[in-house]
Image (cartoon, rainbow, N blue to C red; front, side, top):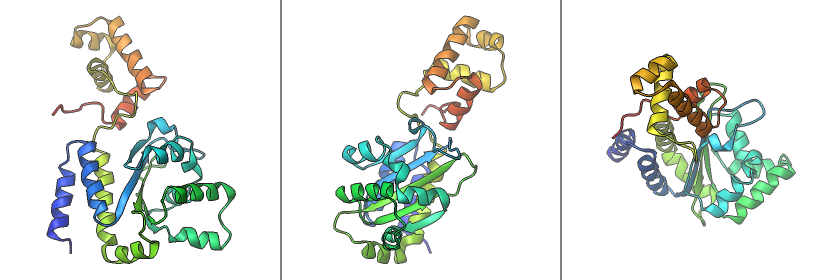
Length: 254
């Protein structure tokens, strides 16, 4: 049975009006279980050979820049054992599997470099949760890193008692993130660009949009071109899809 405290925290999460507010709540709650560093990632642009452009990831973390600049910035995540696990599985997994794989000689050189880097950053014990995907192009997961000094067996013992609640809260986090606007660096739209894309999404012609917005067709084309450039896509149809994925369109200003 869910405790009254957990029920209230879940309610607060579902009522969060921004990713920043939601993330702050979640970081505090996970810290109460001993996880003081989190890294959440989600992509809608996964292919057979790639997770897509890192600039398009929804990436939330409270790790230090010393960690993220290397793990994400230098692409170590591509060879991280638990990232690879998350791509092939759903649910929660203890990092104890790393020790088991190493003991069996199943860790390659690239994975070993990631493990060594993690150890140098006191990323030693924790759990990973891989969320159920709704399409072959999307994937989301979160890594929960235990505070320095906490051993894996201690985290595993805590998980026995509280693992179901932790998975539930992380599932709610993930589902809530999908409903909130998230703008990757350098991909924000101006009000005019967003409005023009919204009318395109509604099936309006350039002539219609110009009349509705009280602008010339040339100006509408300019707004759409700048929107394509901001979103790093080639076509207006791609811009509409990407802006919709990021919840940048039809947003209620609060």
